[in-house]
Amino acid sequence: MNTVLQVDKDLTVYAVHELKEQLLSALGQSGTLTLDLSGVGEVDGAGVQLMLSLALESRQRDIGLYMKAPPKVLLEAFELVNICVEFRCAPEEEVAA
Image 1 (cartoon, rainbow, N blue to C red):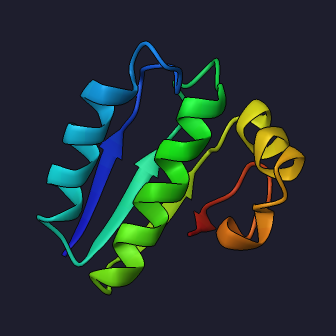
Image 2 (cartoon, rainbow, N blue to C red; image 1 turned 180 degrees about the vertical axis):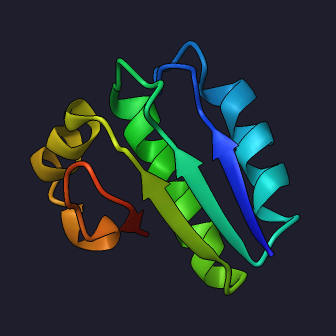
């Protein structure tokens, strides 16, 4: 079963704790999770760490994780810390994690 989760909060230190619980819960309810990130405007180090943690958790559980419409700022952050390979970064399309 594929679950699509709309993320409409910024991936910042102010929202990460609440988002983490929501994302882990959604991850546990599906065989594949697609994160629609079109509503994300800001990303900081805490947001990058959350996304990396979620990607690692999905691999451990053997659950497909995809990003839909990742914002440019998120892809730039991934490039900055050299983790694009973890997410197969490609702007404006669905990206597998």
